[in-house]
Image (cartoon, rainbow, N blue to C red; front, side, top):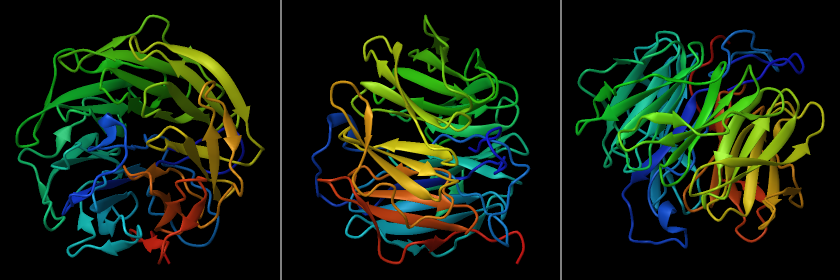
Length: 402
């Protein structure tokens, strides 16, 4: 997920970071019911993979997307686009630090692993190969963190240039945003993790569909379209198929890059990299319909890309690539407007492109594609302030050149 058309920075895509559970403890968290288990933050992917502006000598491993499932310990997987492999880590809610897993980095066999998603139970992971139009599927060993190719993998993406992937909350369907064919493919996930494209797939989207997200009941899906400045809204039918909602698409400021759905399904936030803004849409949780709300203008050269909302719906965090920091915001409980947190923006990152949060709301993780690392930051549950976790940033991927 990258942006273009607002200043010479980069036109490129990200990879994802996936966190899935390992050695779950009996510890419980004070979270909304839909957030007790599962994948709670997926940074939708998209963007070009050409014209990457160099901020410093060296190359980029393009680590972009993050998905988090958090019991006491959790696994982290990072697709590295340039080195064409996956990094794997073990982390813990004790301090959020990452420890490299044995056997990683793991070669994908693809050319450009750009986006990654896992099912809520942490059984399967899926990686989009944008260059070959393929989806690689893996079974996750919860004990060791190892990944094993699913029989039949890789699977055709059903479209051109898959750049974002999403598993529905129930773990029944995989959704793939194909940016160049302007559509969304839907696959049924079998008991072994195998993929079978459903009838009617792929479903139309806007021009250069760039990011996708779903409400936390799995009833509605939203897609940001990079080149026509729209946000499409869909009803998710019982067979996984998509039907555009009445009133969709909705206009956004120029170059919508990423989006996040409130964990309580009250609103949707969209970052726009061309206009440098964050737009709030009120959400009808019964119908999925959106109502355009406030637009928060951002300073020039911010580069607001990935966005995540904490499990309580009180705080939002944005990866500011050009400014090389993380912006934190409090969210008004009645109007959903954003107000900068004291101390924001926060450091500890290098030109981040996306961001994800663990299910407890205790940590955020951001990929640093120029530095080839992943940063981890602790979230103060009272103030929302961010501080780096011990050892951050952590190595990820292999540079293209030295």
